[in-house]
Amino acid sequence: MYWSKALRFPAITDRFTRDRFFRLRGSLKVLIDDDVPQDLRKSDKFWKVRPFLDRILQGCKSQTRPECVCIDEQMIPFTGACPCRQYLPMKPNPVGIKNFVCATADGIVLDFDVYQGADALLEQVEEPEGLGLGSLVIDRLCQTLHRGTKVYCDRFFTTIQGTERMMKKELYMTGTVMKSRVAAAVQKLPTDKTMKMAGRGTSAEVTTEDGKMCIVKWYDNKPVLMMSVVHGTQPEDTCQRWDKKLKQYVTVSRPSIVREYNFKMGGVDLVDRMISYYRMSVRTKKWTMRMLMHFTDLALANSWLLYRKDLAVCGTPKKSIMQFLEFRTEVAQIFLAQHDSQEDDTDLLELADDEDLPIQGGKRPVMAVPHVSVRRRANAHLPEMVSLKNAARCRAAGCTGRSRVRCVTCKVFLCLQADRNCYTAFHT
Image (tube, rainbow, N blue to C red; front, side):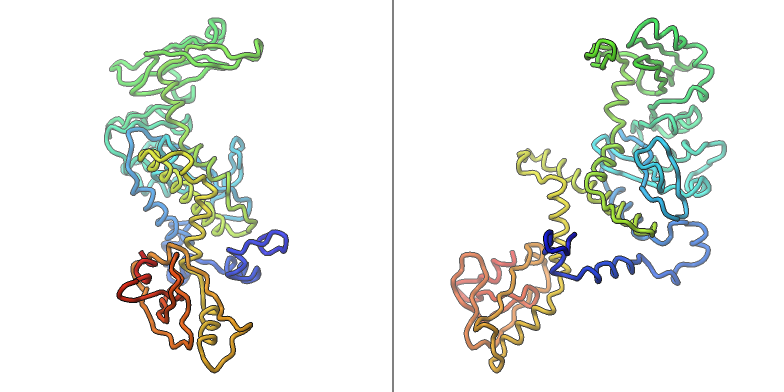
C-alpha cells in the first residue's frame, strides 16, 4: 500500500524500494547465532530476541513504582510455529505467546516475563517449594516493588499460600479467587440461591482467626468471590448496574473491595487496548518478527501514556497533547530523519558544485531542510567551505543572505558571519 500509486507514502518510498524493505525485514536479526552458547539456548527458549526484550524490560523497570499495581496475562497473537505457543480460549487473541505483565492502573508497564514454562520461573524465585504457577508469577513480578505496595490480580494468581507469602514481604494482595482454593470459607458463606433471593447487591464476609485476611462474596448478576488483606465489605457504596428485565440502570450496593478492585485492575487491559489500535499486524511466519513488533508496540504505548501523564501534570491543554497515532508518526519521522541516507543527494550536490559540470535545468538542486531532531544533535555539525562560483542562499528561516558555508551533516548552506550567525541559530 505504501508503494502504490494511489496511496503513495513518501516518508517510506523516498528511502527504499518495496523489495529492499521486504529483504531487510526478512534478514532482520537481533544477535549472531554462533555467538550464543548451547547451554543458553537450552535454558532460554527466546534467546533469539533476548537482547531486545532485555532493553525493553530495562526501560519498564526504570519507571516509578506506585502504591497500587495490577498483574495479568497478555497474549502476543501468533499462530505459526514457536517455542511456547499457548491457547487461551477466553482471550480476544486466543492463540499466541503468553506474557505476564505488571502495570499501573494508568496502563504503564512496570515489568513483564514471557512465559516459557514453570521451570524457568522456578529459577527466578527464591524458595519456590509448594508454590503453584500463579504464585510463582506473582513472586517474580513483585521483585521490583516497594514494601507496602497493593497488588491486584485475577483468580488465576490468587491463592492463600501465595497471599501469605506476599504478606511476609509486606506486599498486600487483592483479587478474585476460585471456590476450590477457599473451600473452608465457602462453607461459612451464604449459598448462591440464598443470595439470589436476597437480591442484587447482597454481600457477606468471613475473616481468618487473626483477622489479617478476609473472603467476601458479592451477588450482582452472578456471585463473585474475592479475597484481600487490605479491603473488606466496609465502607459500602452504590453503583449503577443494567437490569435486563427492567431495561434500565438500577442502583446496587457495592462492597469496598469490589470498588477498589475495579478501579485498580484495568491497567494491563488498557495497554492491550492501546496496542490493538495501531498494531503492527504484518503477516509473518517468524515468531521472532512477531515478538519484535509486539514489544515495539508495547514500548510506544508506554511512551505515549507517560507523555500524556507528564503533560497533564504540567497543566497542558488537551488540544496540545498529541493523540496516539500522531505520537507514533512523530517517533517514526524522528528515526527516519536521524538515519536517513543522503548519499545520492550528496553526490548530486557535489556534481552541481563543480564549475566544469553543467547544472540540470540551469538551477542547482535544492536540498530538503533536515528534521529538527537531526539539526539539534550535539555533535557532527561541522562547517565546511564550498568553492562555488555563485554563493548559495542561506536556508535559515527568515534569512535572505547568501553563503558558501555548508553543514557537513545537514548538507545545507548557512550564513556564518560576524554580524549574522545563522549557522548557530539553525542548530539550536
